Length: 114
Length: 119
Image (cartoon, rainbow over all chains, first blue to last red; front, side, top):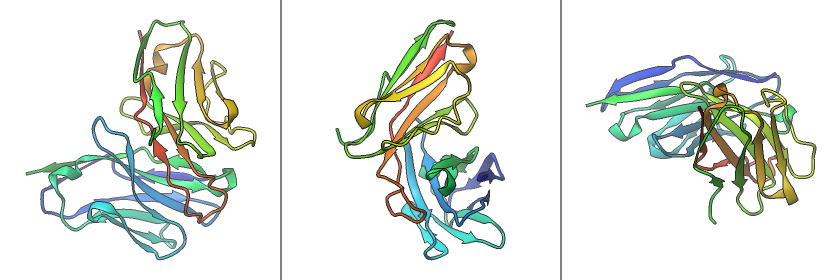
């Protein structure tokens, strides 16, 4: 069975410092992995996705994530946080055995301080 | 419309009443999902419709929950005899047919959700 674990429920950084949001997955198949962001009072937005091409995936707003099969990880990073990055971030795995049903992690709340 | 439409945006109901939540996906999207997000929780999968295949109902928390998708388009999530623990934001999403691992059309488009409050 597929599962996703986001290791931190809350992350707090200062503006201009790096961001690291951690995600580990469990999959019996070669997974497709995604990061979604949810800003307050807004719908979910796709940040980036990994689908067995390059292991380093670049997304919108300067975010990127690296797929590491040996570590079963797909951590989300950004070199320099901006105030507008404050939001809830979800790591997601696609379950190919389940008609590509998406399984969401519990989410990480990112706070950015001036 | 251009996006996934959900109605109502807010619903307040009394414990024990039935509610219906509606989702109108993007035209041409064959996959439709219902998720819910309770306060302080992550997204919880409820049900998944994919074309004419039998829906994946494995996430429905109890037999009070049911969903239909008529004509491969609009979907209705029904909660019977609502309980206070049903209070959550119910999100609908649609996508093109995912089909295969690695398909490029797995992007999900989410509606803005229905905030359900059971008093």
